[in-house]
Image 1 (tube, one colour):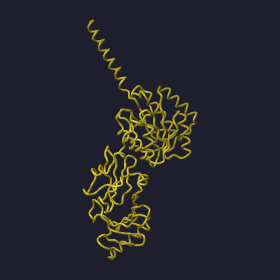
Image 2 (cartoon, rainbow, N blue to C red):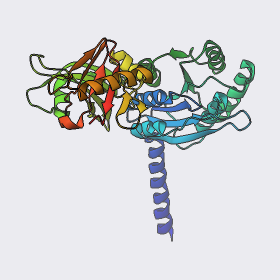
Image 3 (tube, rainbow, N blue to C red):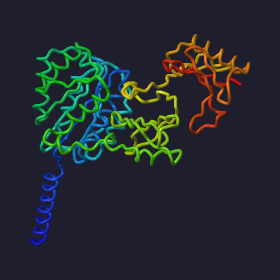
Image 4 (tube, rainbow, N blue to C red):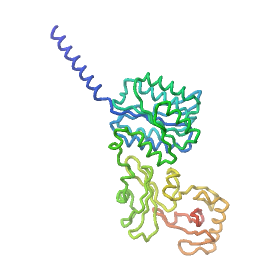
Length: 394
């Protein structure tokens, strides 16, 4: 009997030591919650992409979480989309991009819920730092509490959580009045003054800077996809002919690259190619002379100084006419398309390329990479690079 008690005691001691060891070694050094304004917004994708880039820039040993907010003052809505855990940067990015923005900004409600997330024994809090990174986009807070009220409520929740939390605020494309409210809320949480951004590139850079723990800011910032992209790397992804080369590689937002494909001496026509960094690799999106805007943000096209195509169908019957620039206007587009078709029908268009000019417009039947000539519709381009496509003209 005595021997049984000794064995049982030994087992208890071993289990206790094991549990103690887990308690010491399992907690992460750093834990960060991304608190995202998911209120109604036309360009929420910029926020989602920036959150994903910031998460991927952090150490895989950091515990990361994602929470959203946005609703009404009567029924404020906030939800933890990704619970705290290590090695889940990709999950943070995917969850952020799956958010459907709705409602008004209910920032205070989101802050309080994010604080309460730290109140539990498990998931483990950071042993060195615990941080909430707030991204305000649709506004600051629509519910109008005073700074004193905010401070009192935040202090109450923080005291109950029993942990010191470092708040970082980023305001993206806010109005002066929204900035004022955000400054007041940040001051009420004893946070640094909010960082303000106006473009998607600024937002990506700022999110990386405020997310990485200060003590690790130098050594934890990783090489970004934009730092790694080279002509040789792009050639391994897409090269229709072996003697072509990539020039003028322009990378933005750690996600999108525009490169010019041409011959070694650059005597042939330039072929722009767009790549996207997706699933941890660069992938070709499109390769053609006239680029549709697609999912690439407008300010990225502006940063590239390259006009993308915003298609407007001016006539859907034969002959179909599309304003590929979205800026010509259907009246002008129909006029030039009909006059070009008449020139083709009367034999005035020259050569196999059906070249024809009228005033500021130059029309032709171009070749495009990856398509038979018969599959490519004729196009007219004016001196402002506005494009009209004439489809089904035959």
